[in-house]
Image (cartoon, rainbow, N blue to C red; front, side, top):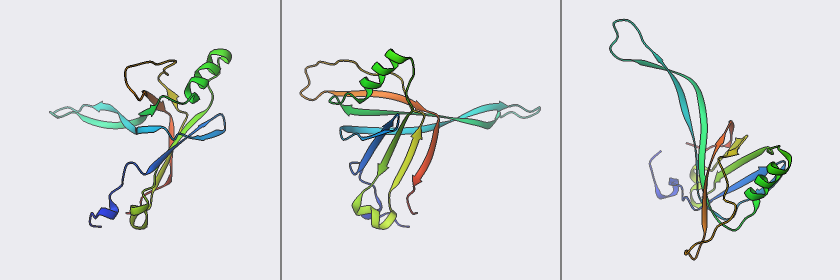
Length: 150
Protein backbone atom coordinates (compact mmCIF):
# COMPACT_ATOMS: atom_id res chain seq x y z
CA UNK A 1 0.00 0.00 0.00
CA UNK A 2 1.42 3.37 -1.00
CA UNK A 3 1.59 6.10 1.60
CA UNK A 4 -1.10 8.68 0.90
CA UNK A 5 -2.53 11.50 2.96
CA UNK A 6 -5.50 9.26 3.82
CA UNK A 7 -3.23 6.53 5.23
CA UNK A 8 -1.25 8.75 7.60
CA UNK A 9 -2.70 8.92 11.11
CA UNK A 10 -3.50 12.32 12.61
CA UNK A 11 -2.29 12.08 16.21
CA UNK A 12 -4.99 14.49 17.42
CA UNK A 13 -7.73 12.09 16.34
CA UNK A 14 -7.73 9.64 19.20
CA UNK A 15 -9.09 8.86 22.63
CA UNK A 16 -7.81 7.47 25.90
CA UNK A 17 -10.06 5.56 28.26
CA UNK A 18 -9.10 4.61 31.79
CA UNK A 19 -10.85 1.88 33.74
CA UNK A 20 -10.34 1.90 37.49
CA UNK A 21 -12.00 -0.84 39.54
CA UNK A 22 -14.56 -1.35 36.76
CA UNK A 23 -15.42 2.35 36.33
CA UNK A 24 -14.72 3.61 32.77
CA UNK A 25 -13.80 7.26 32.08
CA UNK A 26 -12.66 8.93 28.88
CA UNK A 27 -9.76 11.25 29.59
CA UNK A 28 -10.57 14.29 27.46
CA UNK A 29 -7.66 16.27 28.84
CA UNK A 30 -4.89 14.13 27.27
CA UNK A 31 -2.11 16.00 25.44
CA UNK A 32 0.26 13.12 24.68
CA UNK A 33 0.34 9.39 25.26
CA UNK A 34 2.87 6.66 24.52
CA UNK A 35 3.19 3.02 25.56
CA UNK A 36 5.89 0.57 24.55
CA UNK A 37 7.25 -2.83 25.32
CA UNK A 38 10.92 -3.52 25.89
CA UNK A 39 12.32 -6.97 25.24
CA UNK A 40 14.23 -8.60 28.08
CA UNK A 41 17.27 -10.41 26.71
CA UNK A 42 19.75 -12.96 27.98
CA UNK A 43 23.29 -13.00 26.60
CA UNK A 44 24.28 -16.24 24.88
CA UNK A 45 28.02 -16.83 24.64
CA UNK A 46 29.56 -19.59 22.57
CA UNK A 47 33.12 -20.81 22.26
CA UNK A 48 34.99 -19.42 19.26
CA UNK A 49 32.29 -16.80 18.62
CA UNK A 50 33.39 -13.18 18.80
CA UNK A 51 29.88 -11.77 18.83
CA UNK A 52 27.52 -12.28 21.73
CA UNK A 53 24.10 -13.60 20.73
CA UNK A 54 20.92 -12.57 22.52
CA UNK A 55 17.83 -14.57 23.37
CA UNK A 56 14.57 -12.77 24.07
CA UNK A 57 13.19 -14.16 27.34
CA UNK A 58 10.39 -11.70 28.16
CA UNK A 59 8.81 -8.29 27.78
CA UNK A 60 8.35 -5.28 30.00
CA UNK A 61 5.66 -2.64 29.38
CA UNK A 62 5.97 1.06 30.19
CA UNK A 63 4.56 4.35 29.03
CA UNK A 64 3.95 8.00 29.71
CA UNK A 65 1.05 10.41 29.48
CA UNK A 66 0.73 14.20 29.60
CA UNK A 67 -2.64 15.55 30.69
CA UNK A 68 -4.03 18.92 31.64
CA UNK A 69 -4.13 19.40 35.38
CA UNK A 70 -7.91 19.38 35.76
CA UNK A 71 -8.91 15.88 36.83
CA UNK A 72 -8.98 14.19 40.22
CA UNK A 73 -8.96 10.65 38.73
CA UNK A 74 -5.38 9.65 39.58
CA UNK A 75 -5.32 11.56 42.89
CA UNK A 76 -8.47 9.65 43.87
CA UNK A 77 -6.62 6.36 43.23
CA UNK A 78 -3.65 7.50 45.33
CA UNK A 79 -5.95 8.50 48.18
CA UNK A 80 -7.84 5.21 48.06
CA UNK A 81 -4.58 3.27 48.16
CA UNK A 82 -3.38 5.34 51.14
CA UNK A 83 -6.63 4.60 53.02
CA UNK A 84 -7.05 0.90 52.19
CA UNK A 85 -3.61 -0.40 51.20
CA UNK A 86 -5.22 -1.91 48.07
CA UNK A 87 -4.30 -0.54 44.65
CA UNK A 88 -7.34 -0.88 42.36
CA UNK A 89 -7.22 -2.75 39.05
CA UNK A 90 -6.43 -0.18 36.35
CA UNK A 91 -6.36 -0.38 32.56
CA UNK A 92 -5.82 2.15 29.78
CA UNK A 93 -7.19 1.92 26.24
CA UNK A 94 -5.64 4.35 23.75
CA UNK A 95 -7.40 4.39 20.36
CA UNK A 96 -6.34 5.91 17.05
CA UNK A 97 -9.51 6.97 15.23
CA UNK A 98 -8.66 9.34 12.40
CA UNK A 99 -11.90 9.65 10.36
CA UNK A 100 -10.00 10.59 7.20
CA UNK A 101 -7.72 7.55 7.38
CA UNK A 102 -10.30 5.10 8.73
CA UNK A 103 -11.81 4.33 5.31
CA UNK A 104 -8.39 3.22 4.08
CA UNK A 105 -6.72 1.61 7.08
CA UNK A 106 -9.23 1.60 9.93
CA UNK A 107 -8.21 2.37 13.49
CA UNK A 108 -6.29 0.77 16.31
CA UNK A 109 -7.08 0.21 19.99
CA UNK A 110 -4.96 -1.60 22.54
CA UNK A 111 -5.94 -2.51 26.09
CA UNK A 112 -3.09 -2.04 28.57
CA UNK A 113 -3.91 -4.01 31.69
CA UNK A 114 -2.64 -4.03 35.29
CA UNK A 115 -1.40 -0.46 34.90
CA UNK A 116 0.63 0.96 37.78
CA UNK A 117 1.50 4.69 37.75
CA UNK A 118 5.02 5.49 38.96
CA UNK A 119 3.59 8.40 40.96
CA UNK A 120 1.04 11.19 40.88
CA UNK A 121 1.17 14.94 41.46
CA UNK A 122 -0.98 15.82 44.48
CA UNK A 123 -1.02 19.60 43.99
CA UNK A 124 0.40 22.04 41.46
CA UNK A 125 0.84 25.80 41.02
CA UNK A 126 2.91 27.67 38.46
CA UNK A 127 3.43 30.66 36.22
CA UNK A 128 1.95 28.90 33.21
CA UNK A 129 -1.53 29.86 32.08
CA UNK A 130 -2.22 26.17 31.41
CA UNK A 131 -1.05 23.56 33.93
CA UNK A 132 -0.06 20.13 32.62
CA UNK A 133 1.08 17.04 34.48
CA UNK A 134 3.25 14.22 33.20
CA UNK A 135 3.36 10.77 34.66
CA UNK A 136 4.92 7.49 33.69
CA UNK A 137 3.50 4.04 34.29
CA UNK A 138 4.12 0.35 33.82
CA UNK A 139 1.71 -2.29 32.59
CA UNK A 140 1.79 -6.06 32.84
CA UNK A 141 -0.48 -7.22 30.01
CA UNK A 142 -1.80 -5.95 26.69
CA UNK A 143 -4.21 -7.05 23.95
CA UNK A 144 -5.09 -5.40 20.67
CA UNK A 145 -8.83 -4.79 20.43
CA UNK A 146 -8.61 -3.49 16.84
CA UNK A 147 -5.65 -3.17 14.47
CA UNK A 148 -4.90 -1.17 11.34
CA UNK A 149 -5.82 -2.90 8.07
CA UNK A 150 -2.52 -2.98 6.20
